[in-house]
Length: 358
Picture 1: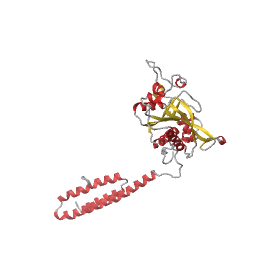
Picture 2 (picture 1 turned 30 degrees about the vertical axis):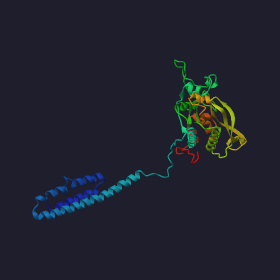
Picture 3 (picture 1 turned 135 degrees about the horizontal axis):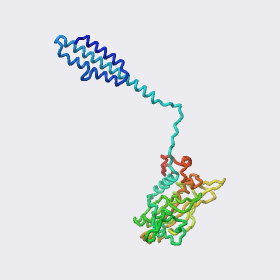
């Protein structure tokens, strides 16, 4: 081993480092020079064979070569890293002059949005959401609601019945969400304050009717609720839902088997120019049915009508959405037309709340 051999090895390694084309090649050179079996490592191990006079200058020369090799590797690595980054950035470059890529953005269906809006309003009033099955018993759907056997709603031309059971009874696709009110009154003691949004089914189909549609109903049962509370609750709901603070309203006497007295609520509107505008005007538009819960309904649910009373109401969700958002045909709600949904749908972050307006 001589100083000349060390210098030749050092120069050879520096030349290889300078010509390394990538990081893998550079690492191979580092291992071949400085690894456990590397050439410089072998020289250090061989110092023991040198004489005492040669050992010091040879060791110093090897260490100096080792420092130069490490520095050269670090410099080349920094260069190769920068080169790799430049290549990556060039390959991932975005041409900002290109047109935006077309992306299909989903929309919230108007029915879902309308349900969320109604739930937000009634929950601010202290109501809780209740749900129930679509397939109901005759008792929950009709009998407990004081609907007599001869009532037209019980006929097959109005109602979807399931095949008869062995005992002759028949289940039914619920014709309203009122059975959930019955289930709640049977399972819970007053006070009760619920709203029931959901699907309902009737044998009807035209521009304003669908065999499957959505309703929202409300029920309040306690010891002190009266007709004034019913009117105040529904007037406030309609004004908030339609966004008209001075919305005119009136209650007309009506008849429903499950309420007594019963009423239909009208809201003010204008039909000037062939259109329909909700708000102050010379015309009226029926919006929902309501009334005080019939004593026979309370009795069917095991509630003492001498001690408790309450009110109930119900309205069609599709019709409310049509009036609020100017949708002309009920059937389009269920056509699965993406163009229609893009036009009438809502962005996913348009979450209804009373605080910022539904």
